[in-house]
Length: 213
Length: 387
Image (cartoon, rainbow over all chains, first blue to last red; front, side, top):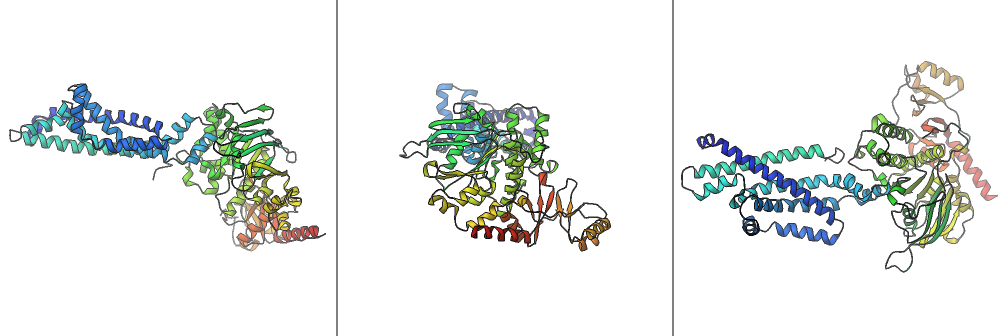
């Protein structure tokens, strides 16, 4: 396996890079979308319930099935992979963002309005910063989850370590097939750990000392 | 903000508030929560809203800064009709203090205080200066507290910062919604004293909602007693309301023990204060002891560099030291000049001491009040009410 690694280090490094890049960009996009949706939803108990329902049900859709379905409108390539990964990444963030925003002490919101902050300023300067640790926890869950889903995306010829795993699995028993699968999987787990550590650091840097526990 | 130099002439930086037929109806409710209230509040006065819960006093307060939109009527600040003004801009001209201060936990004390000036477009340097000035005003050392987070402060300190934040842009009007409801009695009394002292300096127009009649008597220039629907039952000075309650309803609300309530009406400043021997931290003990002995004093009030009391040792204790120690006595009984005799007595009892140190402007020592004088005042008022 060592020999395999050394021989293909450039290909593996490239695929790892693509994998991380896909995950990071999709999670970033998903976070923006999910927080935006949560902002629209959290004031209404009905829409909040709907949002929570969607995130719960959405997570039960098998990623393989969704990717397959996405092939019809988008064809093979990066687009269906990105759409699927963003979809799954958005769900935990949406749920946490709604919970986080709804959990902000209403007396603080009133206090903000009472000293003359506009609706938008209250959201930006009070509600979002206070909900941020909860939202970020959702981002961490998302990131871990879509590391795996991004691998499945190789099925629709998306980028990343998935192609290593799939090509290995499809010619199992052949030369280096097991090596390819193992290297792909282990690399993914390692990358997931690294990303999580990075997110913890981001959390420390972006969460006010006043609300850190 | 300019410092007042004339002590006896009260500065007024507030404006009058006038309500004309202010009404709030909620959909689906037969009776309006606030029913056509007319009220005039003079500039620079502290007016207390009291009444049972659900009487509409808080709703009325929140209509003043339009956190609740009135369904009818007009609100004037000074001569300006603000009923149709943009609420966000209106609120930046009206300080707002709620229970526990409503501080934003993710912002430092300094940032919290600087929010409104920031929204009004002040430059950073001016905001920083103003923040320090306000922390000083509410009795918190800027160097120590500016960069702390609310969770690192006690309840009373948070409330002080809440008041400082409300005063940040020097608004003419201050609205306070049961601000001292969540703190312990001793802290509450100190906060009340602070507010009286600050109001003495600034002369804002303050509207203060409370359910505690003693608090209303102590802090208010005028008291409005409300009944359901925010019906104004009586609007008068505390003295007049205590002496002549307009209806049985008010008499019930004022409660029994009206004689002792008079203790709440007498301010510490109205009694004759004893001028103690004071010593600065770090002074030569022997000299202080000599000074005290010459004046026939048993105790010495130790003050810090700004004249604020630190401790109250006996001459005997001092003579055992070489220089006056700077140890702060946390249990030191202190009341403000505008505190009531009731507070003073409470403070003495809580500290198990026969006297209290009285502080005036910026918490500097104004004198000492001893228990005998409080007793004399009780005797006097009892005599009056009997005769």
